Structure formats: C-alpha cells, structure tokens
Length: 267
Ligand code: BTN
Image (cartoon, rainbow, N blue to C red; front, side, top):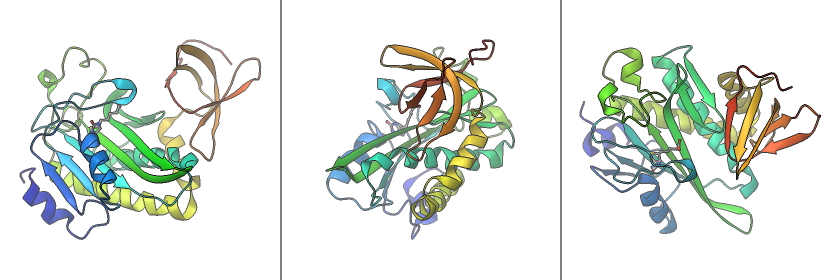
C-alpha cells in the first residue's frame, strides 16, 4: 500500500487521532506546520504527516534526519484541558504508545530512554519532540512530533548516526507497511491519551518504567552545562525523574540527557 494522502485518509477517516489529516510529500518540519495550524485553531486530533522533511527538528536544537520515502514523520495537535505543569506526562504517554506499537514488530527488544527516545537493541529508532503553548499556566495546545525510522537501510543512515541509530526494517529484516504502522500508532496514542485523561499518569508510568529499566539504575544527567550522577528512585506525577545522589540529595530531572552508567558504581 503506497504511503500517500489517499490511502492514509481512507485508513484514518473518522478516527479520533488522524482526522483531519494534512499530508505533505515534502515539508520543512511537520512540527512547524502543526504549530501554525494549531495557532490558527486546528482541532485536537489533527495530524500532519510528511513523506520527507527538509528541516526535521530534534530535541535540543538537533537535526532529525528525514529522507523521503522511508520513514514516518508525524505531528499531532492535542488540546488537553490541563495545567501546563502536566504537559510532560503527555510526552511520556506518547513514548509508551510508540514502544507498544514497535513491540508488536520486535518483541522484548524495545526500550525507552528518558525522556522519550525509543531504542531497539540499544539503538535509537524513534524520537519525540513535544512543543507546548500555554496561557496563564493552562495548556492551549501540545504538538507531539514523532519520527520513526521505518524502512531505512544501512546506507540510508548518515555516518553521524549509523552507529547509534537503527530502523524497523534493519531490525526485522523486511520492509514495513508505513500506512499500517501509522494507523496502529495513532490508535495507540488515542487509547493512551484517553487513559491519561481519565487516570492521569499512574498506569502509563508503570509501563514507561518497565520499558525504561531505569528504576534503581545509576545514571548521569547532562543539562545546561551541568553534569551529575545518581540513582533513579522514581518518576513523579509530572513525569520528572527523581534521582538520588550518593550523598542523599534528591533532584528532579525535567530536561536534558540521561544515560545509564554501566561500569561506574556511583550510588
Ligand atoms: C529527538 O529525538 O531529538 C526528537 C526527534 C523528533 C523528530 C520528529 S519527526 C516529526 C516531527 N517534526 C519534526 O521536525 N520533528 C519531529
């Protein structure tokens, strides 16, 4: 099935996520398109999907490699009636939804890395970039941008990422239908989003922690020029990681990079 507007529209029509759909053969960044559509009042559930991005954006001003005809680049507009402080759990929820979908293709090999990288066999397969607009501490909208490496082969990965990135095709050894995967993903996000609105973070946190294997691990956090280490003791209701240092000081991690320190005993 070709990855095009017609097939995606037919598969997504009437669904809570993915309708309306804006499909682009090529776009600068689906997140940038979503931001301007959301500012113009696009409803919750609007999806922006592209076959190619010319300026795909990653976290922390990084570039997201977005070659044509291979992957999924999607951004969703959500309008939860929540305080801005609760926007992070929405990102956590998106990571869990992606992990659940990818697990159907590669059982037992999917892992989440805080805040929201999805890895398969220790290599990054998906990144999530959430952007939020809030007014007076209330969320006006959240843009949930998801990039999944689906059908890239070894020579599609540029030298800068070939050792740290992978694709679904490289992991399962066959080409994957992108329309089917997109529909499964949007359905899963719709399910977990409803669960989150009803029960808040609790059921999602448990799944996230089981995919992340971070609890009890010693990690190094890098943020804003600061580097510190500690043991992960919990994730709080706002989706922040709680880290306890060797001297017993607790810190909340709300941004930055977190990596497990394999060979160092710090806690
Ligand atoms: C990261 O891991 O740094 C996040 C990457 C997010 C990439 C996706 S692709 C679809 C959407 N549009 C963008 O420009 N970025 C996100």
